[in-house]
Image (cartoon, rainbow, N blue to C red; front, side):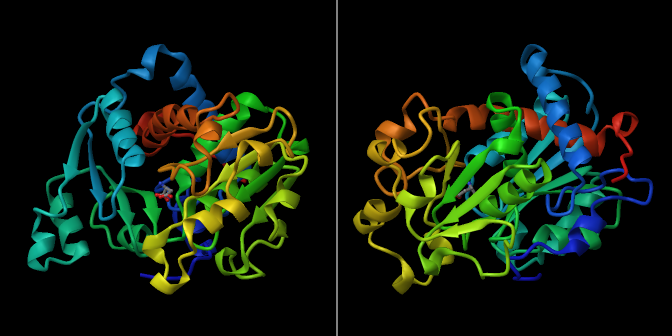
Length: 330
Ligand code: ASP
């Protein structure tokens, strides 16, 4: 498993087969813009039909393999697969043979032997979904549901879909992403989606310890001061402090953090009056975002959750419904 926070072009190549079809979804880095747009269009189509219910994946089996906690991603993958008619297995890591020392790849091969068609994988180590995809014995698809601080491609897609519904023209958008960017797979997938879709300006804001290495995002503007970063912004994407990926000594005090980097109603007034507020969840009220902003009229947080189901339906349909995949070349 690689621990590199930077997406690898290898993953981008490995997820498209020689016929130009999406074989796995490991990262948005390097995914052609027309491929991303096609997935968003498909999600939009599911959204516009009544609850998007279909039998497209009848007879297929999707396994949720979550080795890290999840509320939104796991539930929405489950719902998405069920709404397409697939059978869903929510693999219970704690009560499985993983606890008896079985390796992850042996677990996957065991599930493949039962003819499972897709593995939705969340893992604390970056690169785990890509490793699984390289060692499969079958034609199963691997969907990255968040690996370490590397990528969370369906979150990037659902954020892009949510934004596109409110601001269809990305070219003039000033998007500020604020918070623990260094440890955030969401920030990475959002940046890749926003660049692919032609966002006008992406501002990354955090203290020096919570920013990625200087060369990781050469096309983004870097800020340390949130009051400056949010000035005139059209969209503010807030991130949680991912304490589970920090050394204990590096965790900032919550009240000090809120003073410097929290999104309060007063600070939001520095942005455009119609600035949209997003957050992938789980939110920590009073730490990175004030409760009145999270619940306020500019917040899209629950709409992001709603769109997550449609995006995951689109991705599952694209990967698993053989007759409906679209070969696309960059
Ligand atoms: N739910 C997102 C993730 O799994 C964001 C977070 O945990 O803060 O990356």
